[in-house]
Length: 370
Ligand code: COI
Image 1 (cartoon, helix red, strand yellow):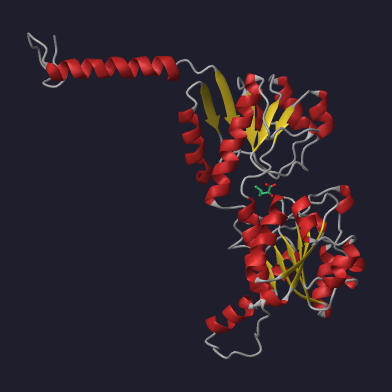
Image 2 (cartoon, protein in one colour):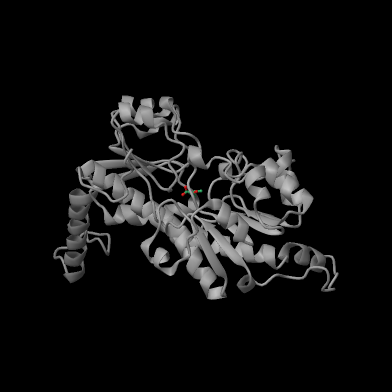
C-alpha cells in the first residue's frame, strides 16, 4: 500500500496512517451526511460583502440547507437564479412588483423573507394571489436607528456641521456657532414602537423632556404620562420632533406646510423612518424662512437609485438633495441609521431562520400578516 505521509509503498501501516485514513473517512462521512444531503435550498438576493460572514455562519449552522446567493437584486429577470430553491431571502428598495412575484411563482417559489423591516414596496395583491408566505425582520436592532436619531439630533443642536467646517478652514473662533443643550429641549416622539421607545430612553439619559404621540399607546409610557392626545399638541410643545412611524397612506407627508406652521419657532426635525413622511418642499421653505432650526434626515422620498451609490465624480441627479446636503443646518445620511454590525447580523440570521421555518411549515414570529 502507499503511505499517505511518505508517499511511497510500505509493508505495514503505522499509527499516523491509521489516523490519516480515519480522518479521511470521518470527513467523507460528514460531507455525505451533511454537505451531500442538503435537502432544502434558500437563495439570497442582494447580498453585500458585509453580509457574507453572517450568511456563511448561518449556512454552517444549518447543514441540511443549501444556501446560494448573488449580489444582484431580485427582479423579473434575476428571479430565475433562484430556480430550484424553496425560499428566497431579500433586501432591496426596488419594488417587489407583480412581475417579480409572478416570476418567482412560476419557479414554484412562494416563500420570501425580507432582511429589513419595511414592507411598503411589496405588491400584496399579487402576493395574496400566489399565496406567498412573507416575513420581515421587525426588530433587528432598534438601538441602531434610535442612536443615530439621537446623535444626529444632538449634532444639529450643537451646530457641529458649521463648527467642523469652520475648523477645517482654520477658523477657531467660538461665535456664532453656539449650541443648544439636549436636556433643555422638549423632544416630541411621533411613534412609540421599538425604535421610538429606545430613543426615549436615550434622551432620558440626557435629561431631556419627552412628549409622545402614537395611535397605539405603550402601557408603560402611558403610566409615565408622556403621551399627548393629538399631534397638534405635540407640535405646539416640542423643540425637537423625531418621526418613528411607518410609511402608510395616512402618514403620507404628515410633515407639511400646515403642520410646520403649528410647530415652535426654531424647531429641529429628525427623520430616520421614511422619506414620504415629509413634504420636502415644505421643509425647504421652513429652512429658508428660519422657522426650522435644522434637520437630520436619513431618508428621502426619492432616495431609490440615489442613496448607496457613489456620486463622487458626478453631479447629483437630484437638485433638491444637492441643496439639502450643502446646507450647514441639514445633516443628510444615506439611509445608514440601520447600518451597524449588530443590525446586519440580525437581519441575515433572522430572515434565514424565517425562510427555514416557512419551508418546514413552522411558525415564525417574523411572519408578515397581510
Ligand atoms: C428597513 O429595515 O426597512 C430600513 O429602512 C433599513 C433598510 C435600509 C435596510
